[in-house]
Amino acid sequence: MTADAQVSRDELVAYLDDYLAIKEMKDWGENGLQVEGAPKVHRLAFAVDASLAAIQDAVRFRADMLIAHHGLFWGKPLRIVGAHRRRVKTLLDNECSLYASHLPLDRHPEVGNNAQLAALLDLPVVREFGDAFGLPVGVVCEAERALSLDELVAKFAEAVGPPALVLPGGEQPVRRVGIISGGAASEIAAAVAVGCDAYITGETSHSAYHDAAEYGIHVIFGGHYATETVGLKALARRLEDRYGLPWTFAERPTGL
Image (tube, rainbow, N blue to C red; front, side):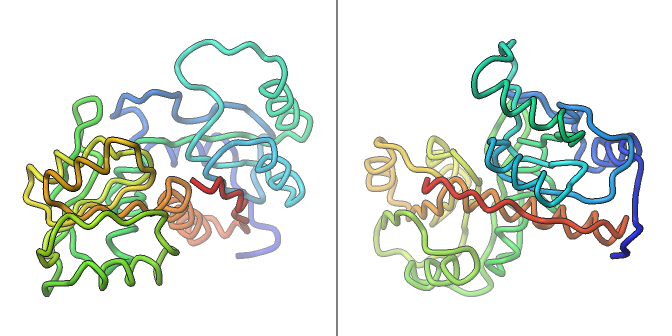
């Protein structure tokens, strides 16, 4: 990176829209530029959630743009009052743009959360799975050798952090692994349908306990937050390589 590196906001947004294929996928929220800040971008910040704390972290870093996985606008009109007003006002007062990429970042084949999790676990991707608005969002991987569940958990803990919960589905070795970051406990049956011995996702649910046991599949819940940090950091490195922009990651774990 260089101290005087910069890129125009509109050029950066156009690149992100194209690279992340923002317009190719429907979503529950609004992807792309959500809040318009300064016309030139010298410094970037990244965060899983566009919380007030993460926005304040970006401001302290003097970032001209915050790129978040979970933005501020989720498909229905929101009044600019209370906590929402404070978030938007802090961005506008400091001319910090907000760019959001939710499902497009999950499913991206290079910097996506799922592709990055597979790479960190040294698991080659063989296909996609898991439907969201008619497009697959997850990946299926084939281990080069059979793994025990304990080995897979240890690999995850070393690469990402200790998982929040592990549900053993039986005694079978792990050869085929499905991965969908974030809140995808409902996709256990889909992982079984594509022949997975184990499934890695972020956040658990009450019913997942019974699904894992009755389908006979190992399930690793790595944490919603933790499984969705990896794509943002990969995107940060790509933008640093392309534009030379310094960046920071706002670590604001939720415990979930």
